[in-house]
Length: 301
Image (cartoon, rainbow, N blue to C red; front, top):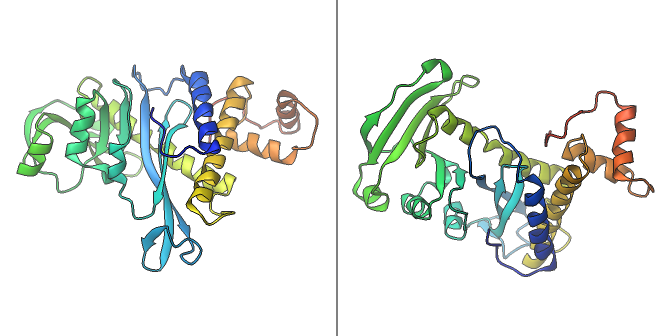
């Protein structure tokens, strides 16, 4: 994975921690029966004060930065981080990423750009993305679906408008799914034709992990409050927060600790001056709380 721009100490440390975390979680089973790694990509906007951060263009009366992140779903490990001003369009970040052939990228419809998706396809990277409501296409083939599972359609299509056909001239797979829990109808586009249609829906559902990562980062690592006003200060603080998150993941897996990252971070914060091993720290917490989790799954909340 190519690192984002910048050569700061904190980014360099983050890139090293990413390598360590990926090695520890490489055999993590995300339960989809897929051979290659699955990545989720999205961004989160962090509002800033315009008078203190005039360089962070966003709106006429507001400033903001965006953290563009890709996580490996095996352990919810951030493997790519780019920090831009709030005005930067998410879809342009697709031009900066390099993913290994055979991997799968799951993204929301804000990244729907057929030329960029076709570039991923040519790089032998698969994708699952939500379709927009105004998608125009021609159906080539339909496969039977079991409506009891929430599936509504599994089709092979070609894009119809001249611009979209020129941008993505090959077949796509269109999967329509009604979420039994929310009743919401979702339509996915993908260049994956082998997995069952229900697996396509499950891949997209796993995208929620990146939303939890953003929420966890803001709630537990205080990235909303910055100690410097320059762009380098903001980047350094965000990378510091990501490094802390990675250290938590590494410690949990390396020591096989049966706690969630949130609980582990709280234990470290409240016992920072105690001379005690991490194993004993967690064991003491479990002893005093018999309802503490007894598995090492990465439960974010």
